[in-house]
Image (cartoon, rainbow, N blue to C red; front, top):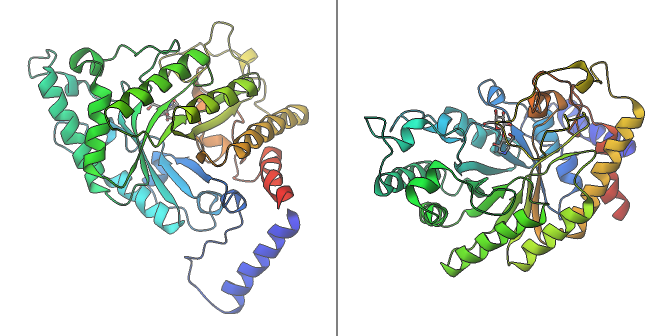
Length: 379
Ligand code: 9MR
């Protein structure tokens, strides 16, 4: 690995330094995504502050390591259309630019979610719930405007996010209460019409749980009966050293493939921190616990033994994903470096977590080397 890195560094130096070539638009292709070429895309979530400043250059971790880019927040309804008809595409446009610069794909996240959607979407001027027809027309307009703007530039959209409860039933949300269960069908139809070439995904957390994945399978089949093909179900992958069991993740991947859809791992991270006993797994952002040092033990750094456990967990997960690479189109890490990760703030704010493959300085961790080693060993 070290030799390979050195060789790439020398090559890029000889191309840019020696020949006096000042073109900065050469992706050195020496990172994770390059290692996994031919298996699946390797993505990252790009935070809004990155999209609001000068974009990372080709040697920055974003370009070096990844070839699929999801906006961590910038394409959510509250950012794109905070007020009726007042659209803002500044950050979303930047995401497209970044992907172009890094020779990567753009993933759209997300069109329909019960979180991060402004209250006005569901209300009339008097603050009363709007009718089914009004909400459907707002949904259609939003999807046509957003998806339409990036037609041909976004590889796929998380059309609906987190519509299921852990028991596989449909979650009670304003979308469902006002429109009815078929809001999901309408969202997919509108997205398909707005960009017939984009892939369409259903995205959720805790899909390693049997009942929940059964709910996703029901959704996929129900949509298929309406002639709507779900190109992939996104298993978010907000995991921990202690959960989930690999066999549960594998069973869920198999269930989804059997249902006739592909799988994307869309928001992978592995927390190394202890959770309060009564905390749930998953990613319900309404959960919040009071900080206490006992839940934040690695402020000064992650002990080597724990670092190794993280590396083992990542290696086990990626080995599994490689076994199903034919049906897995992408593995996206939810963030770029440990310092970026939302897990530092959930479900307890202000902790020091180490859930990703690059450390706070953007350097590869033991887990990174293990993940790259899996494919290098196979070549
Ligand atoms: O990582 C995101 C965090 O910065 C936001 O505050 C939060 C609310 O918008 O959303 C986080 O991302 C979520 C993603 O959009 C959907 N799945 C769960 C993710 C983690 O909460």
